[in-house]
Image (cartoon, rainbow, N blue to C red):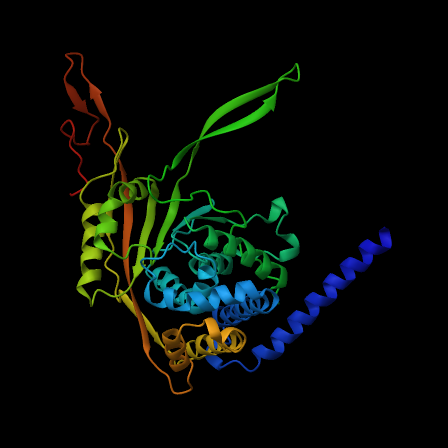
Length: 416
């Protein structure tokens, strides 16, 4: 038994060294723009997404056919399908994961330069709403790991190596939740550099954004002195420093339906927390209405309590539209990644690839293909102030403590 354990450890170390060597040799051929910490991490994650998808396509014909059959749905009906259809999660990951990961690399870099990314001595809590296959969570993990220090895969479960940030997510699709669970384990077990992505393996605390509850009743069982089971009910209070809506709010009527939930997100942001909305640009009337509706809901009321006044302030981001091109140092690898996986998919399962999807994807992986990918950001920051202390005089009248104004009863000064 002892020698079997030794053999297993040596074999695991040998595989890790081999993966690192292959990656470092490939990294030498990267363009200069990608020979940065962010660029290397982009290349590393891209190779893992590609490897994971190719493994699933070639190992299980049913998975491959499911992906091929859902390509057109993901391209054209992304706002209407439930993503519980078999193959949709893999198809979405193929078309969007690496692209969206790089978008959030650029977004978090901009927010950091504007001093809007929460950085605290205690744990930073992040919530990703509508995470899909999780590209924004992987980008958030890399952003904070770069600043707080990466955790090695071999030390990931040591209490002393717990990261100084924690990510949770909201996702209704069981296909996405299962894919994310699978890929997170795949990526962390095969990462060439051995750097751990602190993305949850579990299926997320919140399964649905509708009627989301940030204060959750939870039960635990303990034993009393007689050995009998005792049930204890407690409230788990979920509070966040950063809440991200990644391509989740896409229609005005959807935004209005989630009015209560959006206000709850703003209410349960911590002091100086940031609520970030990312989606298509407002060049179209559709998204102008979406962003106007979101701003109206978040800004129309305060979020104070008896002890504090609180409100959200829209942050003036410049530029608020970011973009990259298909022929730039990051755009080319995204195109190569799509070409590598789609070529295998089309070769094996071309009979179930919709003809229209084949035309679109064939054109998008052609050598001369080039287009600008642009997206827009909307950001709100939570402002919290302590209410002036109000004392009652002997006659029952209110008076403020010296030098501090008295607020009229019921007055919320969030607009001032």
